[in-house]
Length: 186
Image (cartoon, rainbow, N blue to C red; front, side, top):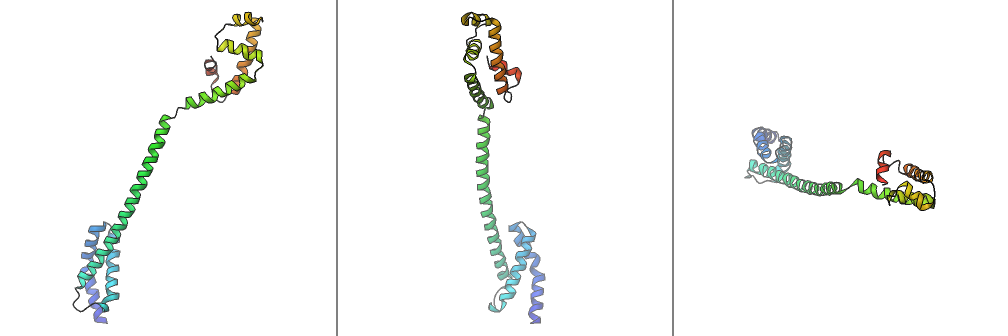
């Protein structure tokens, strides 16, 4: 048995670096290559009694290393294919998010939302106040024209417009700066 162990040790020392170099050529990772060589040498040692006397031991061990490298590379290929597919799906999803965001117009969202608030507030105003405000903002009538049409004073018109504007300003305070409110409501 000690002769076998001495022969194995000599074989290990003589071939280890060559086998590591061979495996590393394919797996591109020295630690993995070293593991494959040690595992293959151990596999030979554990199965030496089953081999025929004329077995070419270096070829036997190298064949074991070759199969370990192939298994490793196939695993790497499966991993890479899966990673590529995940990257492709992520890129597609990312493109979708970019396109959606590029097409997104915050002003359209806020304009619709603001218009809904304005309509709701105007509907809730007393009829005279709403009527005067609409005549001023939507029909572009002057205070004097509105006063003559409704048979009230211009101060009364100003009061109703001020009341409507103040109510709208409060309702829209989170949406528009005060300076834009006047522009938006024209």
